[in-house]
Image 1 (cartoon, helix red, strand yellow):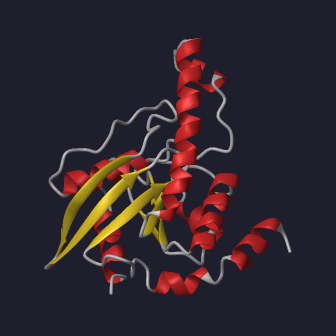
Image 2: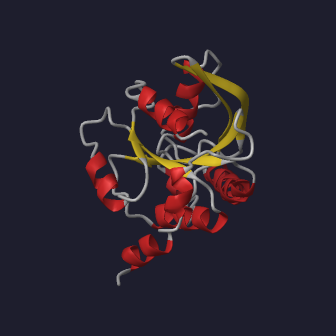
Image 3: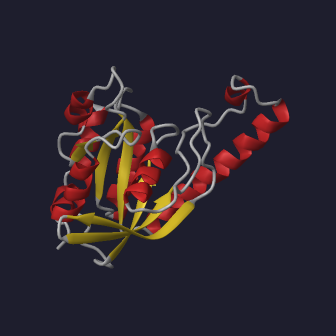
Length: 217
Protein backbone atom coordinates (compact mmCIF):
# COMPACT_ATOMS: atom_id res chain seq x y z
CA UNK A 1 0.00 0.00 0.00
CA UNK A 2 1.58 3.32 -1.06
CA UNK A 3 1.58 6.47 1.05
CA UNK A 4 -1.38 8.14 -0.68
CA UNK A 5 -3.51 5.00 -0.56
CA UNK A 6 -2.74 4.59 3.12
CA UNK A 7 -3.78 8.18 3.84
CA UNK A 8 -6.99 7.74 1.87
CA UNK A 9 -7.78 4.53 3.73
CA UNK A 10 -7.19 6.17 7.09
CA UNK A 11 -9.57 9.01 6.31
CA UNK A 12 -12.32 6.81 4.90
CA UNK A 13 -14.29 7.13 8.13
CA UNK A 14 -14.74 10.84 7.53
CA UNK A 15 -17.19 10.00 4.73
CA UNK A 16 -19.96 9.51 7.28
CA UNK A 17 -19.22 12.97 8.59
CA UNK A 18 -19.29 14.39 5.07
CA UNK A 19 -22.79 12.99 4.52
CA UNK A 20 -23.92 15.37 7.21
CA UNK A 21 -21.55 18.14 6.17
CA UNK A 22 -21.95 21.30 8.19
CA UNK A 23 -24.44 19.63 10.55
CA UNK A 24 -22.65 21.25 13.45
CA UNK A 25 -22.86 23.31 16.60
CA UNK A 26 -24.73 26.34 15.27
CA UNK A 27 -26.94 25.61 12.27
CA UNK A 28 -27.97 29.23 11.88
CA UNK A 29 -24.49 30.71 11.84
CA UNK A 30 -21.56 28.52 10.93
CA UNK A 31 -17.96 29.39 11.70
CA UNK A 32 -16.10 28.30 8.59
CA UNK A 33 -12.31 28.24 8.30
CA UNK A 34 -10.59 28.79 4.96
CA UNK A 35 -7.55 26.49 4.84
CA UNK A 36 -4.88 25.87 2.21
CA UNK A 37 -1.40 26.66 0.98
CA UNK A 38 -0.27 30.22 0.29
CA UNK A 39 -1.59 31.82 -2.91
CA UNK A 40 -4.31 29.27 -3.63
CA UNK A 41 -6.94 32.01 -3.34
CA UNK A 42 -8.25 31.76 0.22
CA UNK A 43 -8.58 35.53 0.65
CA UNK A 44 -9.91 35.92 -2.89
CA UNK A 45 -12.62 33.38 -2.10
CA UNK A 46 -13.42 35.01 1.24
CA UNK A 47 -13.61 38.39 -0.50
CA UNK A 48 -15.91 36.99 -3.18
CA UNK A 49 -18.30 35.61 -0.57
CA UNK A 50 -18.29 38.93 1.29
CA UNK A 51 -18.98 40.86 -1.92
CA UNK A 52 -21.80 38.46 -2.87
CA UNK A 53 -23.28 39.15 0.55
CA UNK A 54 -23.05 42.92 0.05
CA UNK A 55 -20.18 43.23 2.53
CA UNK A 56 -16.76 44.83 2.24
CA UNK A 57 -13.85 42.51 1.32
CA UNK A 58 -12.17 40.82 4.23
CA UNK A 59 -8.52 41.25 3.23
CA UNK A 60 -5.84 42.22 0.73
CA UNK A 61 -4.61 39.96 -2.07
CA UNK A 62 -1.01 39.89 -3.31
CA UNK A 63 1.19 37.78 -5.56
CA UNK A 64 3.72 37.71 -2.72
CA UNK A 65 3.27 34.52 -0.68
CA UNK A 66 1.95 34.82 2.86
CA UNK A 67 0.14 38.11 2.32
CA UNK A 68 -2.31 36.95 4.99
CA UNK A 69 -0.22 36.38 8.11
CA UNK A 70 -2.91 36.96 10.73
CA UNK A 71 -6.38 35.48 11.06
CA UNK A 72 -8.99 37.66 9.37
CA UNK A 73 -12.55 37.36 10.68
CA UNK A 74 -15.88 38.56 9.32
CA UNK A 75 -19.05 37.71 11.25
CA UNK A 76 -22.61 37.36 10.08
CA UNK A 77 -21.93 37.13 6.34
CA UNK A 78 -25.31 36.19 4.86
CA UNK A 79 -25.84 34.75 1.39
CA UNK A 80 -29.29 34.45 -0.19
CA UNK A 81 -29.77 31.06 -1.83
CA UNK A 82 -33.18 31.06 -3.45
CA UNK A 83 -35.67 31.39 -0.60
CA UNK A 84 -33.08 30.35 1.98
CA UNK A 85 -30.35 32.27 3.75
CA UNK A 86 -26.91 31.04 4.75
CA UNK A 87 -25.21 32.96 7.54
CA UNK A 88 -21.52 32.42 8.21
CA UNK A 89 -18.69 33.62 10.36
CA UNK A 90 -15.69 33.56 8.03
CA UNK A 91 -12.15 32.90 9.20
CA UNK A 92 -9.62 33.65 6.46
CA UNK A 93 -6.49 31.90 7.68
CA UNK A 94 -2.78 32.28 6.88
CA UNK A 95 -1.49 29.90 4.24
CA UNK A 96 -0.01 26.67 5.56
CA UNK A 97 3.53 25.79 4.46
CA UNK A 98 5.88 23.03 5.48
CA UNK A 99 8.77 25.51 5.44
CA UNK A 100 9.06 29.30 5.29
CA UNK A 101 12.34 30.64 3.87
CA UNK A 102 12.85 34.41 4.01
CA UNK A 103 14.96 34.26 0.83
CA UNK A 104 11.81 33.42 -1.14
CA UNK A 105 10.53 36.94 -0.49
CA UNK A 106 13.66 38.60 -1.83
CA UNK A 107 12.49 37.66 -5.33
CA UNK A 108 9.57 40.08 -4.89
CA UNK A 109 11.72 43.11 -4.13
CA UNK A 110 11.58 42.99 -0.34
CA UNK A 111 14.67 43.96 1.61
CA UNK A 112 16.39 41.35 3.78
CA UNK A 113 14.90 42.89 6.91
CA UNK A 114 11.43 42.97 5.36
CA UNK A 115 11.78 39.40 4.12
CA UNK A 116 12.94 38.10 7.49
CA UNK A 117 10.11 39.88 9.29
CA UNK A 118 7.56 38.50 6.81
CA UNK A 119 8.95 35.00 7.33
CA UNK A 120 8.65 35.34 11.11
CA UNK A 121 5.07 36.57 10.83
CA UNK A 122 4.21 33.85 8.32
CA UNK A 123 5.56 31.13 10.59
CA UNK A 124 3.51 32.45 13.50
CA UNK A 125 0.47 32.62 11.23
CA UNK A 126 0.81 28.98 10.24
CA UNK A 127 0.78 27.93 13.88
CA UNK A 128 -2.31 30.05 14.53
CA UNK A 129 -4.09 28.63 11.46
CA UNK A 130 -3.60 25.08 12.71
CA UNK A 131 -4.80 26.02 16.19
CA UNK A 132 -8.04 27.40 14.72
CA UNK A 133 -9.05 23.89 13.67
CA UNK A 134 -10.24 23.44 17.23
CA UNK A 135 -12.68 26.35 16.88
CA UNK A 136 -14.34 25.97 13.47
CA UNK A 137 -17.64 24.23 12.73
CA UNK A 138 -16.54 23.32 9.22
CA UNK A 139 -13.90 24.14 6.65
CA UNK A 140 -13.30 24.99 3.04
CA UNK A 141 -10.01 23.54 1.85
CA UNK A 142 -8.92 25.65 -1.09
CA UNK A 143 -6.70 24.15 -3.79
CA UNK A 144 -5.20 25.88 -6.82
CA UNK A 145 -6.59 23.90 -9.76
CA UNK A 146 -3.58 24.86 -11.88
CA UNK A 147 -1.20 23.07 -9.49
CA UNK A 148 -0.54 19.42 -8.65
CA UNK A 149 -2.77 18.58 -5.64
CA UNK A 150 -0.41 15.85 -4.45
CA UNK A 151 1.41 17.94 -1.85
CA UNK A 152 2.48 17.36 1.72
CA UNK A 153 0.46 20.37 2.85
CA UNK A 154 -2.79 19.04 1.38
CA UNK A 155 -2.26 15.57 2.84
CA UNK A 156 -1.31 17.05 6.21
CA UNK A 157 -4.39 19.30 6.31
CA UNK A 158 -6.74 16.45 5.45
CA UNK A 159 -5.11 14.22 8.05
CA UNK A 160 -5.41 16.91 10.71
CA UNK A 161 -9.08 17.44 9.88
CA UNK A 162 -9.69 13.71 10.08
CA UNK A 163 -8.14 13.61 13.54
CA UNK A 164 -10.42 16.44 14.68
CA UNK A 165 -13.48 15.20 12.77
CA UNK A 166 -13.91 18.52 10.97
CA UNK A 167 -16.34 18.38 8.03
CA UNK A 168 -15.06 20.08 4.90
CA UNK A 169 -15.50 20.78 1.20
CA UNK A 170 -12.58 20.96 -1.19
CA UNK A 171 -12.77 24.09 -3.36
CA UNK A 172 -10.87 23.81 -6.64
CA UNK A 173 -10.13 27.46 -7.33
CA UNK A 174 -8.84 29.39 -10.37
CA UNK A 175 -10.91 27.61 -13.03
CA UNK A 176 -10.74 30.85 -15.03
CA UNK A 177 -7.10 30.08 -15.87
CA UNK A 178 -6.26 28.19 -19.04
CA UNK A 179 -4.13 25.56 -17.31
CA UNK A 180 -6.78 24.71 -14.71
CA UNK A 181 -7.17 20.95 -14.25
CA UNK A 182 -10.01 20.08 -11.88
CA UNK A 183 -10.05 16.44 -12.97
CA UNK A 184 -6.59 16.02 -11.46
CA UNK A 185 -7.98 17.08 -8.07
CA UNK A 186 -11.03 14.83 -8.43
CA UNK A 187 -8.83 11.84 -9.22
CA UNK A 188 -6.61 12.60 -6.24
CA UNK A 189 -9.49 13.02 -3.77
CA UNK A 190 -12.48 11.10 -5.20
CA UNK A 191 -13.93 10.47 -1.73
CA UNK A 192 -14.62 14.11 -0.96
CA UNK A 193 -17.09 16.75 -2.15
CA UNK A 194 -15.30 19.03 -4.58
CA UNK A 195 -16.64 22.27 -6.02
CA UNK A 196 -14.76 24.05 -8.81
CA UNK A 197 -14.99 27.86 -8.85
CA UNK A 198 -13.24 31.04 -9.83
CA UNK A 199 -13.05 33.32 -6.83
CA UNK A 200 -11.69 36.03 -9.11
CA UNK A 201 -14.59 36.10 -11.56
CA UNK A 202 -17.30 34.57 -9.37
CA UNK A 203 -17.86 31.71 -11.80
CA UNK A 204 -19.84 28.81 -10.27
CA UNK A 205 -19.97 30.33 -6.80
CA UNK A 206 -23.66 29.40 -6.78
CA UNK A 207 -22.59 25.75 -6.91
CA UNK A 208 -20.51 26.24 -3.79
CA UNK A 209 -23.37 27.97 -1.94
CA UNK A 210 -25.78 25.22 -2.94
CA UNK A 211 -23.31 22.53 -1.89
CA UNK A 212 -23.21 24.10 1.56
CA UNK A 213 -26.98 24.60 1.64
CA UNK A 214 -27.90 21.06 0.62
CA UNK A 215 -25.80 19.63 3.42
CA UNK A 216 -27.28 21.70 6.23
CA UNK A 217 -29.88 19.80 8.24
